[in-house]
Image (cartoon, rainbow, N blue to C red; front, top):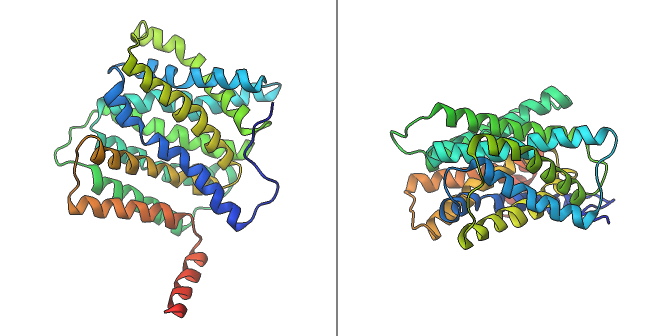
Length: 306
């Protein structure tokens, strides 16, 4: 069975729509912090990663009934490790060991990693426009979430940097290699690969899996089915249509969503300066999707209509 969200025709309107589809993934990923802190047992980053990846992957395989063949056995395994297998546990590890602000700033460096890897692996020359907005994104997140005197844990920092770089490399290699099948099947392969590879590591480092409660079961179901299978289906569908660098800016939506959920659910608050950082990060995401010529055309249109 082939389940795909792709089209043979591609216009500027399609580009906008596919950007929205791709952006839906990091928007949902932004719920991870609230779900993890409120519903999941603490101290199990690897088991949390297994339970986030494997159930959705197996369900997807039962639906699509297809397995990788030939060179795609190795390629799907590599991309699974980069996009999910490294990213998931190191994301949880960084969240456990670092204040949320520092973890968010490290994750905000992803556009810079994507720009670098795209230049090294695909000869896509970096532009001052994109580099500038990438720096603005890091600055905006830093203003929004960094607290004075935040403690540094170097294991957590290393986990955040390696995890962010891993997903960035996964984005670029996914664009370079493409995929041999539809996005749903591809997502099922990668989630299953990563879940299976993480099981022995989880047993080695954390022992037996945590006991499931009704609360944690709800959290794992959300992260696995919605935050895993459905959102990665949307993510990989979109990656086939938008550029790697454009997609690399979209994960900045995750800390913005996490911040909004903190305001609504956890009763947190933002200062005026933090709201400015929030707006700067939002502008970074929007304007990084444009070329300078498109931005100038928009400004000229505004001038002529006023």
